[in-house]
Image 1: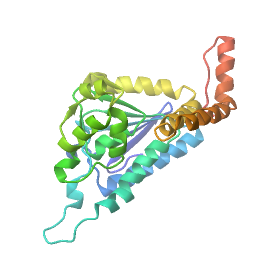
Image 2: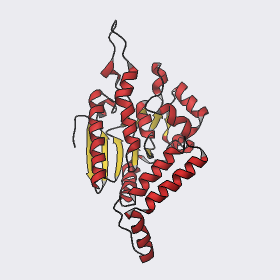
Image 3: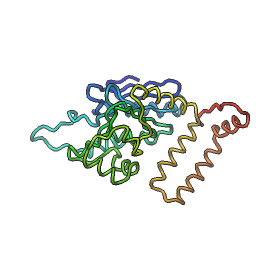
Image 4: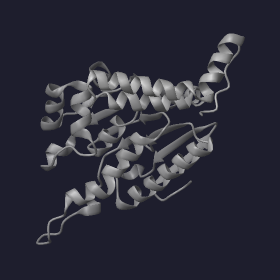
Length: 266
């Protein structure tokens, strides 16, 4: 799938969605939102058909995503104010919900700056790898607005309220190495190793028990709002579902027969 602002490639069960406006650091326009929605729908269809088992999200050029392209919604002098909440409701909210609801591993390969909504989108993925030269910036405060695309929810859960508040209010650039040390992302790697590392991990996950991965995601995300007993009950219920899956049967059989498993994702 090739659009004006994105590319979607599928190889060996790994779908790679590339934000492709490198001249604008892959910042979002209405057109990009439309094309990303279409691409994620294709990924969801591919997951149902067993063709797509992992999604990698990255950016073309020297940036991952600089958030909203402000020129796409610039306000002329004397014009009526822009309803920013409407833009969040129409574009960013469904985008991040679609990412989080995919029943497969979602990996962000952050190849450069991830700013504003771009940072929130990366952090909404299941695994985040970042190039050593990459950075994360909560740039909303510079414009007099609040973190959106789930940023105000994700940040304090990843790094705690003190660091989340500092990032949100000060809008300082956070290096990939610092992001890793804070637990904001999974791993920082050398620039030239980013995509080979991500592709190796994605290919390995694509060969794995993706049915169980989807249920693991469900359990992890639910834990942030569940109390302990509710979470224990959810673990019990998900174990029951996983125990009835073909992937579980294949995993046990492969272990007993001392062979490599052939998981199908169901």
